[in-house]
Image (spheres, rainbow, N blue to C red):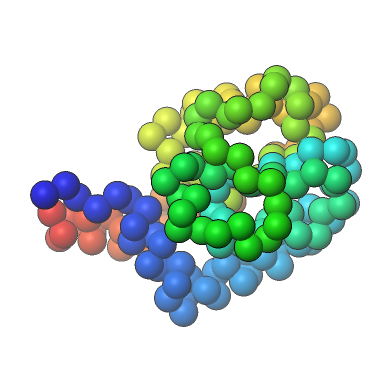
Length: 151
């Protein structure tokens, strides 16, 4: 039997009271951070449970989502959904004004490749916002222990 994908416990955790608390807190933080970022194209990669671009005033907001996640997460924020992968962004070089990576690096097979792609896709004056948990945090230790115990 194949082990559960790493994001399956993440999905469950996000539905728990601590997960909901973190999502609400992060939503408030993103709202404050993106409000004064200007340009034309804003893209959120993954984490469709929150709209990190809700307070941003750019004319185009898009969510990059993997095809397997499209069925699980309906388009609840009425934004453009684009299928793709964070390690190979389906955007032209220097075309994105704002790129938000909420908890993307934690689950990436090659986080450095994700950052290279982000740099390639951003305009010279573009902004990137990255959120994530510290790998040495108690949450990460819990995830690691649960994987050891579960296997």
